[in-house]
Length: 292
Image 1 (cartoon, rainbow, N blue to C red):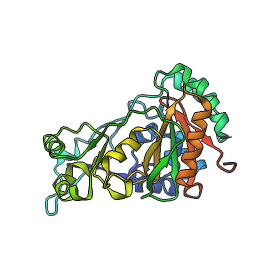
Image 2: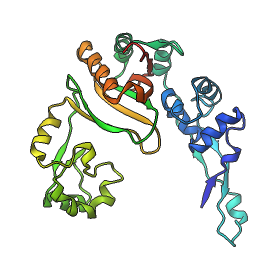
Image 3: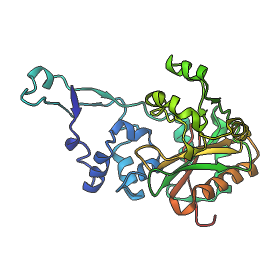
Image 4: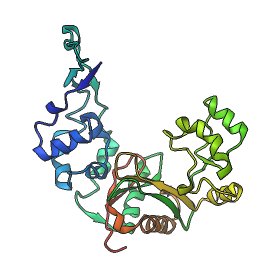
């Protein structure tokens, strides 16, 4: 078994940037897929640092790269064999961004802050060349562990698959059949759910009172969630980032703007370091938060 020699990575970047990327266990091929906002969310990385990272680690420089910076792991008392050392682990970087993406990126001014109105109008123009048009809001927050529920004024257009816990649902889960994105349960169901925690927990599907998925009236709760104006949110497990899908860029722009505004207010502006708005397969635009 082998592992990456992190000490040999990012020697061409400033020391503090290299240390931050190593601490986050961010591989070069992963950097290419990350939005600027996601990189800034890494502790110790600033907007200026992102520019230096992009210069050296971008889709062109990392394209089809084979990273051999690996060292064999050692079992105590058992040194690595020459065969292991001679066969480094190969990590293939993803392909570079397409021409459409690069063309769209030229329409966005680096470092500029966009109002919600300007951002939505800009995305509406950019998204004409893409098939998937979901509006995605990425929030860099001050800390991990943030979670809650947003009450949006308009539907997000996303179909939510909800199940209410029962013996049949439990049997399906045990068979590996999970056909829902939200599972509701009553407090009395929790002892039965305990044995399924190892399956549901890693997928973020375990009912929890904090998220409103454990309730005395799951039928009423289901009606609220399927109405389309209720949107649960939480930060990623290891990073202070929240991803929200707020609708389609083709729907009424006023409705989109109100959903975006209420999302920012609902999470709490004091808890948000920066916010980026994008569409599926488009670059993102940094939002101006000071006027909200």
